[in-house]
Length: 198
Image: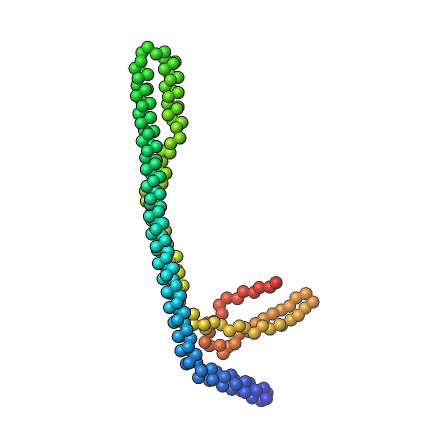
């Protein structure tokens, strides 16, 4: 009826009056927010740059340390493998001597060769490189780009919370619904709903 209609107009008048007041105050609020956000951005980027500088120095120093450690390991392996190579060579010479010795009994020669070769083969020497002579920075372009792209401006225009409505209460259940403000033009629209209960 006409009473409800005029009440709706009064409510709409209050909403528009409050909105006009908020808009009139917004210029100064925006300028204050911009100044604060710029200070925050500078501080955070300065901190990020400092962290990156420290990480860069740490990684470069670690590369030197790892490189030195690799050289030491490979040099030690070189000594072991060279000594082992000499033992193998001596074994080959011993084999040739035993094969060419016609005076030795064939079974005795066979036992000596097997004993000699087994003793050489059972020496514990690593026959693959203990470390690769390379190293590189573990740098993932996708993750770095994702991080860089995640640094953006939050406009703070989040959707307003909905009005929760209790539709029905039963002896062991409750029906709920919610509705959004149709006049909420500034914020992003809700595209996903998550219902949680305890």
